[in-house]
Amino acid sequence: MGFGCLMCKKPTYIRYKKFQASFHSFPKCPIQKKIWIKKCKLTTISPFKYPKLCSFHFELGCFKENTKTRILKPDAIPTIFVRRFMKKKLFEDGILKESLT
Image (cartoon, rainbow, N blue to C red; front, side, top):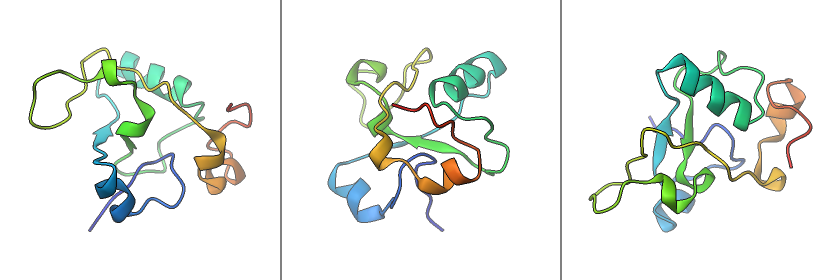
């Protein structure tokens, strides 16, 4: 069974494969997880069993260099969000705050 990005609307395997996207789980460290949730302007991630963000939400400097696969640096924080690409249902369910820019 596939998975997609928690934030992106219409997540398709073809789109992700075409742009060589990678997926990254929310950090286990409670402090880092809280920072990610705040940066994503989420109210919660609890309804989701395995929440992940795709690599489109991270700047290139957030990834370790010279690795075969895309690996986030331990201090990486998602910073790229474009409202028109966000899932409308997240807004409707009150999971995503309206102030996302």
